[in-house]
Length: 150
Image (cartoon, rainbow, N blue to C red; front, side):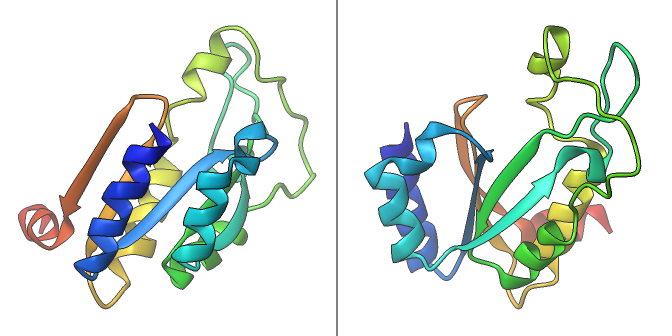
């Protein structure tokens, strides 16, 4: 699946678009050669972010869940927005397990809004979004999407 993303990312970047990739911070997949090649080739910027800083909560306890992610972004602004969202350490975390494990695969609304802000505040709005949980890769023309929203 990562090979498909790499091919799509190459096409998106060749057309002037941007790419981002995300996995849990401690995922063994970060060591895969194809991912390391992608990060280097597209000069992606690492951004560490904690789920609790963007509203990720347990469906069971309603307490924050830390869920540490790494995003690699070609948009510097997006990487800066993400990197500013780390756990403040002033709360207790619920362990991500059971039902919460599945549900943590969905981005909280606050994270989605942060993504949109980071992408839209770029000189161009074309992006390639990849989420391996849903096995969906698509090219989104945000120029048209944003016009429809406003």
